[in-house]
Length: 217
Image (tube, rainbow, N blue to C red):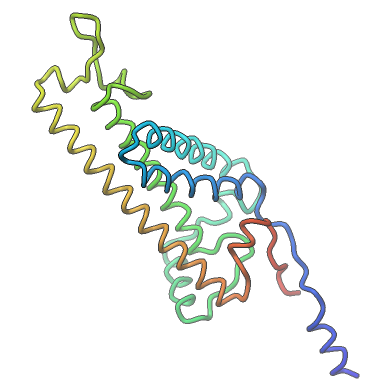
């Protein structure tokens, strides 16, 4: 009888609970699409710029949501000391990491790194856009009016050579940060796949449905 009850318990559907709210899920997939559109549209300036705007707005909203959103969306729920993050990552590699209902220490650290990286990418892109095209919200801060009344990049007043050098510096920085973000995205995907295997749950599906397996009693 005991064995029958045990077998029945094993066949019982697992209880699923809501973990990720609608905004977190929309942000996750929208910012991913926005980043890749911007990354691969460098030669299509208009598309590149508007994709960058979308990413910037999404990141700003996510930062706000990190303070006022529900429990698992808040930074306070997934910011861990560096030692805890490193121990979790080591245990994950060994296949013995503790399961977290919300973001794990490794996942939380990745969220912070990606937000910082995306902010850096958008910020350097806006500066570059202002210098090279005298456009975007930062243009008034890096440009001044010429005698003819036309706004010109501030660096042009110091000579075309100085402006070109400044533009190249910001372009290089913009590309480096964007490439770092791409590496972080690849590591993020690898971490999700590994954690899904270790914890026997589909974390990608959870970010679509918002539901995860309830903690064991």
